[in-house]
Image 1 (cartoon, one colour):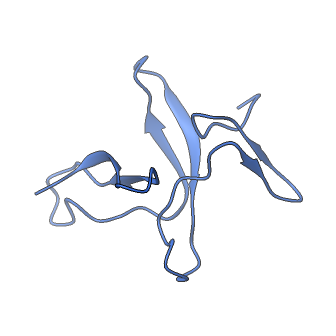
Image 2 (cartoon, rainbow, N blue to C red):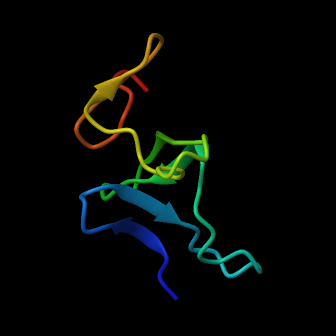
Image 3 (cartoon, rainbow, N blue to C red):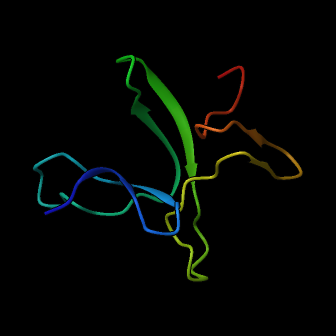
Length: 77
């Protein structure tokens, strides 16, 4: 089963739950605090709307309220 960070053929990045708690492999949506490659937890946002892109990490984009970096982080968090 695939879990952890996953990038599809179109370049969209997702996070599939890694814990072996009965929900392993579950695609995350909304705001989530996850460990980065530096071992520090960072806040990421994954598409919630079920529009064919559900679970996609917001990267290098912005909303009216938030700006997301290339790696999906909200600067300052």
